Length: 401
Ligand SMILES: *Cc1c(COP(=O)(O)O)cnc(C)c1O
Image (cartoon, rainbow, N blue to C red; front, side):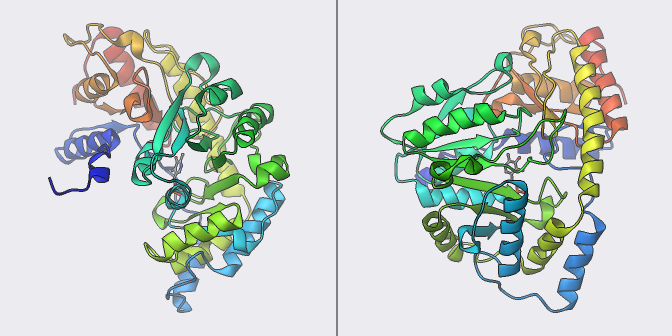
């Protein structure tokens, strides 16, 4: 085998295998209800699109500085100071091709061979694979539905060794939708910083939050926090800009400088006219976001209620993001349409085959007792998908059509 050892360690994504199965079913004319999307089903707001078009027309089509144009970095600093209560200079900002690349650059900038990275589980699929690519070692800190999928400071303490370098925190969380309170975050991050760790705070869902919950940036907790915190955010989820590929990280100047060096020789600066559009996104009003979140909120309540009405499924009401992460382990071993399942991959396949409904196995996110459903799809689809699931799981009737 001539492929490098490090790439051989990366897992193929089960999300992608479900997605490709769905695509082939749809191309055969089968009606499939998809709950696997990791992106808002809303279009990018018009004012943002217009800013990109204007920028293209004006000829803003060349390379930009690697870490992003000054205007955007200033707009990001303005946003962080106003909304997150953290004060950064443009030298502490790197704009990348999505929050994903921003996190990857930072992990590459921080990890030496064998350094340990603490990842609360369930986790976003890319963290562990990025740690592998950065030659680090993931150490998972498990959480369960019983404590709203949140870890505690003693969970962190217990997992710190002399090799631990970084803790990743993601609140609101993909896939669980959990949101940490200010006090919970403070305690967890405090322990990490006391032990000399860096903390990457992935805040991509900060504005997709419900029930009056508030988002807090750990970097705002005080000077010692500020010096060890890397705050990551982006435009994909908040502004429905997944395809535009733009996100950013802010943090200590030396780490941002190192991340910029990596970006210099891998992708260079992010897309030029997307950066202009991002300025418009940050400076524009928030009506499109509030409308989107209000719609997500309706769907969230509905889907959780429907799921909890199905015998064998228990689902926590998530406080943020646009996913539900129901526990389906009571269904394992049960006879469903003459078949039994033993894990989340089996069950997701059965649901796709028999109910023509696509969910993502929890195994991809570190919990085999769960599946993930995204409610970034129309109310009509959610209703139909829940009808199909209920028929299959409560009555043993498969979907014909
Ligand atoms: C979608 C997502 C990202 C990446 O977003 P991009 O800006 O599109 O790269 C990062 N973290 C989490 C938890 C996400 O769900």
